[in-house]
Amino acid sequence: MRETDDAPDWKFKERDVLVLRELSRDPQLSSRDLAQLLDEKYDIQVSHVTVSESIRGMREQGVFREAVIPNEEYFRFAMFEFKFNTQNFADGWRPAMEYIRDSPNTLFYFLSDGEYQWKSVMMFRDATAQSRWIHDCYKRHGGVIANIRNSVVHNVMKFRTDPEILATLHEDDD
Image (cartoon, rainbow, N blue to C red; front, side, top):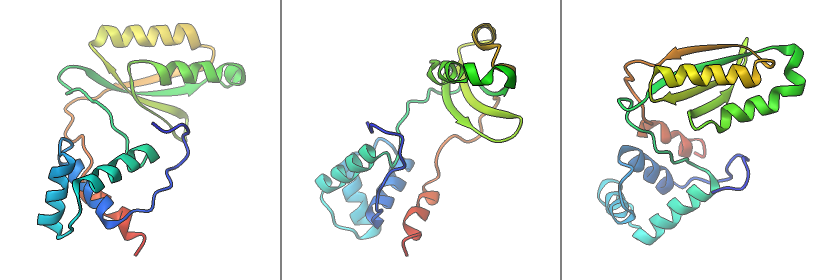
């Protein structure tokens, strides 16, 4: 795992992009399977050791992230948006941010512009757990958070990276 949050410094070879594309199609592929796929599908001969080293290097550089995401049937997913109380923001923003970021319920946390500047995708076992989390958050950080807007995520229609988008990583070099 990388020590910093700096952007990765990786020079993509065509092979790297193809490996990422194939892994996005099937994350369970072994380096042997990937080497065989590269040969059969793209006419690129490379050893499974080279493929494995490439994957390890990209992982260590932070080129891609790996996460275990349970099927949505097991959890209730929700989008949370946080609006600030600017009077108390300077003194309390860091503990509030860390509380949200470090919560085991937080799957994805990001900053945006607009009135609600912190946003997260959260996971809860049920509606009661979700309500309890909101209550506890206000109790601990209500001086910083003026409002939490939350929406339950229903009927997830797509949740994956399409391999085709990854081709653009190598196209920029051409």
